[in-house]
Amino acid sequence: MLKRIITAIVAVIIVLPVIIFSNTWVFPIVVAALTAIGCFEMISCIGQRKNLIVSIPLYIEALFFPIFVRFCSLTGNMDMFIKIAVFCILATILYIFAVAVFRNEKFPVTEAGLMASAVVYIIAAFTCLVYVRDFMYPGLFMFLLCLVCSFATDIFAYFTGYLFGKHKL
Image (cartoon, rainbow, N blue to C red; front, side, top):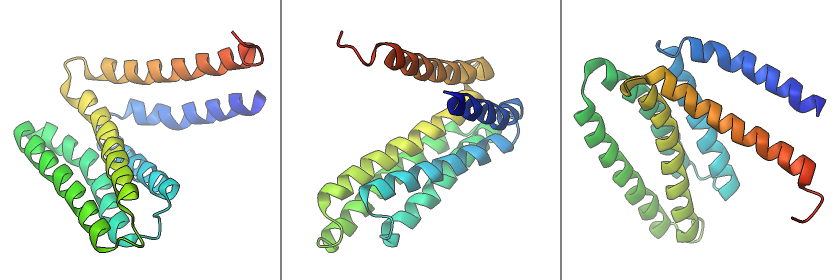
């Protein structure tokens, strides 16, 4: 329990400056790094970390989108962002399945489908954090609401499991 509390305190110390400077370029850069880390972890879980022909373009895409959505918020080109995002998502899915078809022994189609859906989900979720912060009317409030709700559900799930997890309901 003490280890979890210390981890939470360290996490708050790291996250607090990012939240304070969320209206600067620090925020989308940190979110882009977290997106790339999330994609790396998912690709590792699937077992395709060494498949560089697929993973490197996905990492580039993961680094690109959170920063690009901030750029579009500053220039006011949301139409351009949506068009490019839809094109990149479709091109990514097509690319992943094309690699799976031509390298069937090393990259089965089932793993390709899992990778395509998981990575697109991760990139979209992290990009939406920057989008909510920039485009919604009460952007900072909505962003903090997303974080607080996420943390609260995790904390209460932990304590519920800790208190009631040993007994059947």
